[in-house]
Length: 94
Image (cartoon, rainbow, N blue to C red):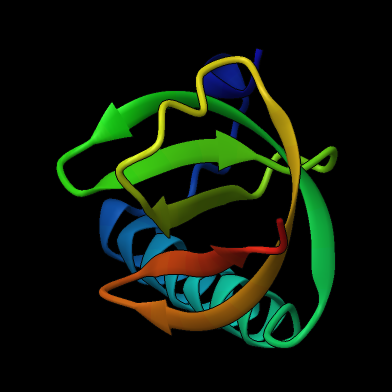
C-alpha cells in the first residue's frame, strides 16, 4: 500500500499537486463541453429539475432542456446550444 511506503511526499506537496490536477480536470471538462455546442445528440431524459428536464447522452454528458413537456424515459434528439452556470443546455429537435 502506498500509505506504508518509504519516502512519502510531504502534505504541502500533495496538496499543491492535487490543486493542479483539479484545475486541469476543470479546464479539460470546460473545453470538452464547449466543443459540444452546435452538435446533435440523442438524450435519454430522466427527471425534471426546476424549469428544465435533465437527461444524458450515450457518453454520459448531462444535458438540460427547458420544457413543459414530460420527457421521462424518452430518447430525443437534442442540439447543444450553450454552457451556462456549468450546465450543458440543449434544445429539442422535435
